[in-house]
Structure formats: structure tokens, C-alpha cells
Image (cartoon, rainbow, N blue to C red):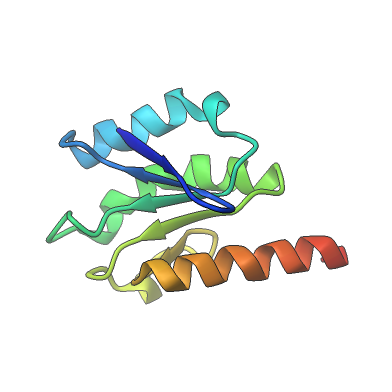
Length: 110
């Protein structure tokens, strides 16, 4: 797992583990970044099935209950078939925009 600090979020990339192992690693190390907005970069994973992303659902929900954003970066999945709680966007710019919108909503008390 590679972690890069950006201006207002952490970018987490998989360094070769299976998607299941990667989601487990993120869950296991959640305390290391629980106070940060997170973007999980899965752009290098091709042919991802929607059900593979469900491994991130629990940690995503928990992270958001802590008032931090958890966004998955992936451009080959059909987002209409995923739960609404799982935030998946196709580009890094959209992930950054999503985090910014989430922060504005939290600041306004929504």
C-alpha cells in the first residue's frame, strides 16, 4: 500500500495485492489515517467487478461517520449498480471536487 499526502486528503494506492487483500489492509491500518480524507486509487485495476468494491463498503461507511470523506477512484465499474454509500468517481479531479463539496457541507452543518 502506497500513501501520498496531498493538500487536503491522502491518496492510497495498491502496490500489487489483490483487491480483497488491499481492502483488508486499509481496514487494518485505518487508525493511521482516520482523521484524514481518503482517496483510494484503483485506476490501475482493470476488469473490476462491482462486487469487488463492496469490500470497501464497511470501512467507507465507518470513515464517513467520523466526518471524513472516503472516495474510490475507478473508471470501469457501473456506479449505478453500487450502493449509494460507496462513493466512486472516474477521475482524480472529481475525487478532489467530491472532498471539497463534502467539507463545505460539513462546515455548513449538513
